[in-house]
Amino acid sequence: MIQVSIIIVNYNTCDLLKNCINSIYEKTSDVDFEIIVVDNYSTDNSVQMIKDNFSDIVLIQNKENLGFGAANNIGLKHAKGKYIFYLNSDVILLNNSVEYFYDYWENNKNSNIGSLGSILLDNKLMPIHSFGNFSSFTDNIKDVVKLNIINTVLSFLYIFHISSNTIRKYKKVHIDVPVFDNEKQVDFITGADLFMLNNNDALFDEDFCLYFEDTELQYRLKNKNLKRLIIKGPEIIHLCGGSVDSNYSIKRKCTFSRIQYELSRIIWIKKRYNNNFFLKSIMKIFIIINWINPILFSKTKYYLKKLISI
Image 1: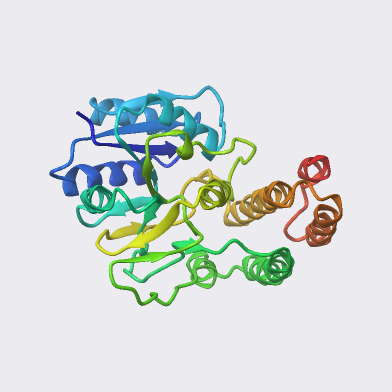
Image 2: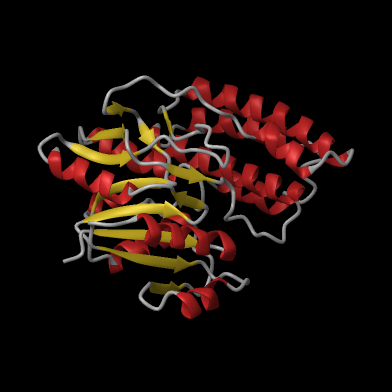
């Protein structure tokens, strides 16, 4: 009997995906598991790499890029395990993380658990963004303004040929590890390592293409009084940002990520505040002002139409 179904959505991350899968096989023991890879119409060698190296993996090939949430939902439909472990393709397991999650849930079945995650690490083993709070509307406005300032500075660094490593260094933010014994209750866990029961609660809202889908999913868990917990034990590296097309320049990666993030933010606000026209319109105005920046957004007409239509 399969105990855990590990679902990985892939889009043009062949090398990262291979390393991720190898780490799962190398580190996971004492748990019956399957790996399901849902490929979002990659144009690199990802699909062939899986066929050549991992014959036991369940490979699902989408005919277009359906986005993160929709692709995970397809994987969920094929999953046979009691539990689901959503993993990004750019993570590496450093220990038997799957068993840690599995044992914790099995030993706390009556604790109203909705999801589990861990404190993620970067490639220098420093803790990075692993969970978050359900931000207020005011917090979202502040975040949009802050992102505009940060990304404008980064765009000038790019223009003056500051190295990509330097740009990434400024973009990555380490966190202080919260003090807790065995677990810590949080608002939501990032979708990079999300462990859940295999049921309808694990379905993502497909209105989100990328970003905020993990937030929305766990907001539904909150409304069902189900806990979202960070636990001690699992050790997982998250390299961050691997699923953007590797052929993109750094400037285009930053642009695409930011545009998609802000589109998803509007969808999230729309859903959380019951499609409040006033709040939604204020947020759109702030985002459009940001997009006027010609350095970052010379090709945003399509996205602007999409933003207005939400």
